[in-house]
Image 1 (tube, rainbow over the protein chains, first blue to last red):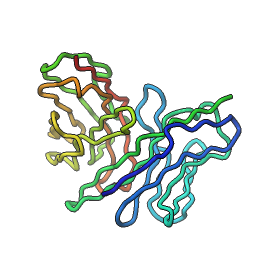
Image 2: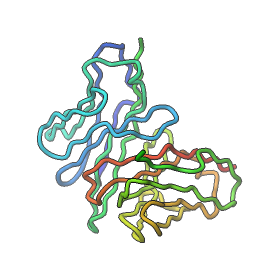
Image 3: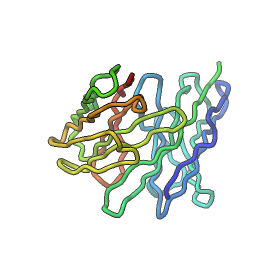
Image 4: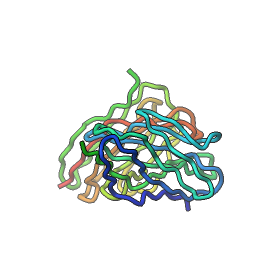
Length: 116
Length: 114
């Protein structure tokens, strides 16, 4: 079965330091991978996706993610964290069904806390 | 402005009282979906729709109904709500039906069932 794991409930980092939010996946076939961010009292917002091509994907707000097929990982990164990056981050993978429909499978989420 | 709207944003109700949460998108998207978000569980899909009159169950469909009579609207119906349906609900839409595109999310509906 397809699945996504975010092994850390919370990540703490100081402002200005690099940050990494981890995601591993299990999927048959080629994965379509996504990162979303949720700010307090808001819906999810799309950050970036990997479909094919370059393993390093750049997205919104200075975030990037590295697709690693051998490690089945898609970690989210940012070179220099901002306090305003503090939010809940979700990794997701597309689960393609036999009837040509699909769904997104989400990880449990990682809360990022950037301290001043 | 391109957006997904949900109403109401907050709702407190009692067990057994039928309710509907509306969802509308103005982007002409084919794909629409309902999720519930619970602490530690991430988002779980309730129902989805690939297009008008085409709906199917997600991972947690029990106790919910949906309909897709128009492309823009995808209401979520709880015929007889129970306390275990207390949750934060999100509607989302996406262009196409391949899953290659990102989903656009509504602001959420926080439902409490007493």
